[in-house]
Image (cartoon, rainbow, N blue to C red):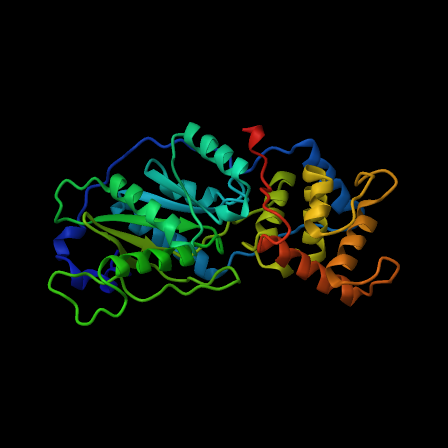
Length: 362
């Protein structure tokens, strides 16, 4: 606890951090979804085109952060777990489940604006059945943040209003946790009269500096504390994004691919063309012609298997995103650029709003 307390200790009495641990039942779910027939076909296609997935990315700062989290989490009364709404199962971390154990959690499905309204309703029902408190957010939209703060205040339930509640906010790298934290801080400043409201008033607690954000995963590297609510007083412990250690089974390999497609794992660890091949197969398999229409391509009359192999179909997509004619030839450099652009279009929601995990299996 001493590692991050200096950032916030000056605002509240030292004895306040001795908060008893409250054990609450927690319902967990499988974080390695079973293979569906479509998943098996996807793996077969990746093998056919020699696109193998061998993920080995667990930086030293993540191992250190996990150790610190184990040491400090006993003082947290509940957990705020941030996941990517496009991969609500794949972005659940088994390493963190072992640390959380029986603490109550609020699951924040961030980037919910990148999935359809039907998927959002399905996701709320899926998580609600498992006994979790749920919130849907777009970390860049203050309207969704304003809906999360009351849920955190309700979970706090302090015995004494003057004693602050500690909670921990956790999640995979690049699920939008740091952006969410910055939005929480902005919300707190707005309630106090603006970011530059002059000298600090008596009794006021400032939320600290902004969390560092970035498009690449693994930006946050240390434990930090900040205030999210003043009445009742609630502090969140910000932690670095922690990656799963192993991706060994076929199901775990697909989980790793989905994490990489959404940007939670660095592209080069798998390869942009491999990620593009999987994303192309998944979207066409799940959404058919609607996927090509969202891309602005001419309507296709045949499926992804059969007369049109998946690789040549992806070649058409690559030519389209680069603005090349259908009869032109693509170089290796063209394919690399097209794969990166295709992934960015998906991550920005410019080719439709899609969920990559299949909730029907659970």
